[in-house]
Length: 352
Image (cartoon, rainbow, N blue to C red):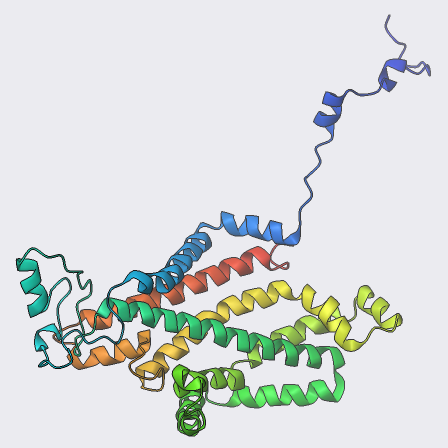
């Protein structure tokens, strides 16, 4: 029977409970997720950032694992044997070439591990020095960024949360540091600290690390925290008026607890992104300081010191300058692209 369109009678078939299949079809609920998972999904979709991350991981693992089984040491002079004359045939070997003794072993049917990048002017295997230089540069970049992160979070959070005269004084100090010529101050501080620290660390555990590396960390701690502190301060200023902060203040929570439990966790995405972008800056700074002779102590290599040493024979052995330059460029470019990918994935303002 056809229903009269003007009838007020209720059609009971419309009120039959829906089946499980009908519910599943009509109600499509999104699975529960978190901010971190959403960020990781967006990061994985960014192919450039993903490839850059893979390159960083491969370079880092290579710098850590290759020296374990590589038969040559970074400071081992192959032509120098105690009690024997120096064999100069090992000096300045081209890639995949051998010294006089090694060539004799090869002619006799023995296997000799190749020198992939040849040797330097002192007869040291150049490949393992590149690997150790990469390890030093990555370690300096990572630990320097951690120092900058800790100082920047501490100063920025205090200035942003307390405000008033404390914020005014801290920001004036930041402005003064910003007004200083960056590169000139880095070079001057590195030179002065190297002379000052050398007698202080003599005979201690820090002597193995070297005064130059310690001075680099001090330079980063003195100069490069200002950008991080200003960024954290801006985030804290926008967050301290939120309702959950006012509720914590009303319950009598202390300022340090509010900063640790509420404010810094809500800035963590910005902190991660800034730290990732700070690492290539630290690596580049270490590289040009080592290039100028203010980096790591000899015979410990870094990519900058290797490039500096290669200038003496650039016309005869240009590959010694090209190889560390390519490694520095690859590391810095990969870290910058990965940092940009982190910013695109985790910055809430870009994903709003």
